Length: 271
Picture 1 (tube, rainbow, N blue to C red):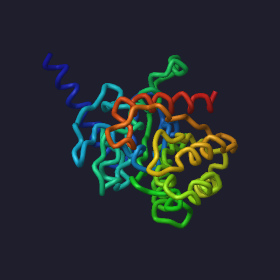
Picture 2 (picture 1 turned 180 degrees about the vertical axis):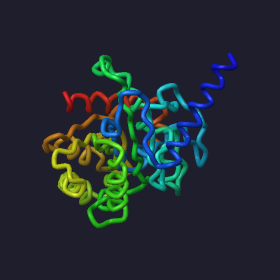
Picture 3 (picture 1 turned 90 degrees about the horizontal axis):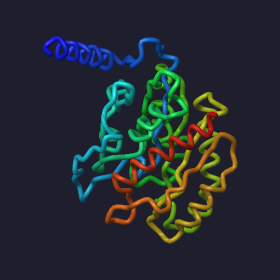
């Protein structure tokens, strides 16, 4: 028993040492850094995670599919790798209270996918970039949010391969008709700019068609999201996912379900 406890303690110390040194610790003995899969999490509050947030407090409930794993790391605000844990965006979306988002359940669903059962579990690197209350214009090339996303994604790819961008945003663009009607064109431009600036012309992007909105033009934005026809772009429909009492943010249960939906969409793009 004592030997087991000592072994676990030593393993944890090694993991912390790797993370604090800015390196990407891998879970499998045969893995190399090039095999790590990097996923950028971008958009606004439902990507940043508000599951379990009531007022300005998070209830601290972490479902099994959101718990830490040695195979799942996150890039923190200082561009250093650490073991991923909820709330993933705590040091990124700093002006709001963060809770459970789709990133952790996505990663867990990926490493346990039946499509990967004959392979070593992949090392997953999550790159939180989402900021609540932001419109798509605030993510356009030349803005601080866009610059931060590109900088963080480039830093992350030193540890592995940029596998996809997961995008959940648009609630703020449902307030004004002109913004809702311009959403499709702005989103396509954003995808093209990211592919150019991340040197990845075939970069996969998976977006969520809104589950809710802040204004009267939610359906206009949803149709724009579902109507994008660029290659290697997939859309999962958030309609019907349970919402918190504010009727805007997904519940913890909904975020876990969304994470699995995003995994299925990503795997469909890769097989």
